Structure formats: structure tokens, C-alpha cells
Image (tube, rainbow, N blue to C red):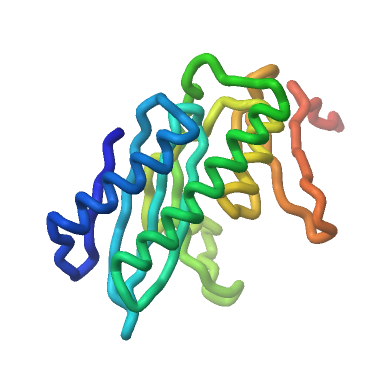
Length: 194
């Protein structure tokens, strides 16, 4: 398991790094034997420490947590408990569906852009948005059930994914009524003639 421990404007010592690596490795090893990748970032917020943790499992799940406490170790321990709870829930759901993924999730690479916000008065005449930042993101190739599970466990409002069965890009999203919506575009859409 590769764990990266870093600090934002604070020094992360060897003792804290060792604590993070041993605790996080033990928490993940309870449920998965395949190696994973994790990033744990510490920062200072006024009179408290913040810990942001992201754990990438070989199955494609990304478990993440944020926690704040007066002590840096307590902040990590709270975050690690949240991560372990997410992984435990994920593992239980996999068992409930009698589904164990035999191979890692395929990822589709996609360009991601951040566009400059503003009101209609600021909109340029050419209607071309101003790109503030760009990056490359990965879109997992998973089933609808796995997409819903990953969206809920990560606490996101939506998840874009490539459907394993059809190969088409799909979207699952949280609805205001508490249900989950699923968008599956048709293979081909005929444009109106006229």
C-alpha cells in the first residue's frame, strides 16, 4: 500500500507519518488484500488541525474523509474511522450483491475544465467560456450498482461513469426526493429533419 502523507504549511514529522501509515494500512487490510493508494493531507485551521484523506481501492472505489480536531493525531484518527466505516459498508454491499470484482476497474481518461463564473452581463459576445483551469480526470468503467455505491460512499451529488454492459457514458445522481436518478443516453439519437 502506497500512502502519501503531506502537510499544507505545517511540518509532518516521521512519528505522525508512521502513525498514519500503520493505522490506515491496518484499517484497509481488514477488508481488502489488494494494494491501494492513499493520500493524507494535514493543514491548520485557526485553533484546530484538519485531516483530509483519500483512499483509492483497486476495485475503483475512492473513500474520502475530512475531520477536524484540536490535536493532529485525533484529527487523523477521526478521519481514519470514517474511511474504515466507508470501506466496511462497501465490502458489505459487495457481499450482499454476491459480487466480487475479479479485476481492477478500467478507467477512461477525460479532460476536465473549470470555467469562469459570472452573470449574463459579463458573458462575451462570442459565447466562448473563459477557461480558468484544466486537468485530466478518470471515468471508471463500472456497473450502475457500483456507481451508486461509489457516489453514496464518497458523498457526491452525482457520478459520471462508463457502463460496463453497454460501454456508454452514464450518470447517476442524488434526487431531492431522496432517490437516485440514472441517465443512460440512447446509442444514437436521430436529429429532426426539416
